Image (cartoon, rainbow over all chains, first blue to last red; front, side, top):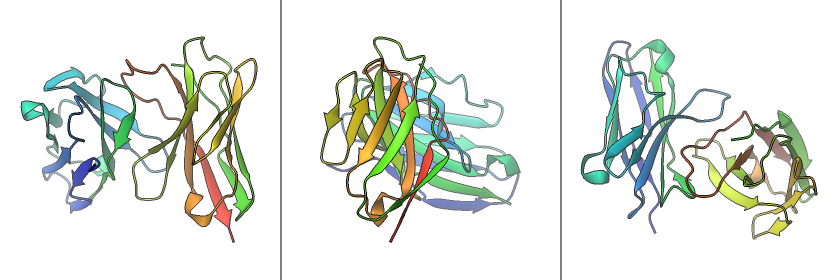
Length: 112
Length: 111
């Protein structure tokens, strides 16, 4: 069974530029999570989807961050414009019925 | 979800048992203790979980005290590949809106 797939694995951009991350969850998993992980810290939830509906986006900075999960499968997280403080690892996870969460390898973003 | 306290770092010699402690004094009756680890440049990976009885799987053993206020994750024969950050999380199974990670314990296994 394939795991959670994320791309790109690494991204370097200049501040004020846009960036997008893509996640393909495990087949059949209805819940999808995006987490942010700063250096030396544990992951923190940004947004959770149940199928195609964003049911918890309270921690998503909506002035510059957006996300979508079309058709309840793949998801894209976007930042526009990126700031220096957005440098971090962005992790995607999926689960079946909100039980065990399976994480992808993450995308490491560096904003210069 | 209850909060947990873990030491920031630990060392372990290869081949020896690694015992990682976790305090969760505010755990409630319906919360389980879960352990995850995060190897460098990877996402967190589930290891084991338990409610009140000791648990063992192919990766590790979990010892939970009788009062459930603390637990210990045991890697019986640590290898260099076990070098990672280990997170102890208390949560309810199913209906989990999110995982609340602390800063975890950075385990360094040395030759």
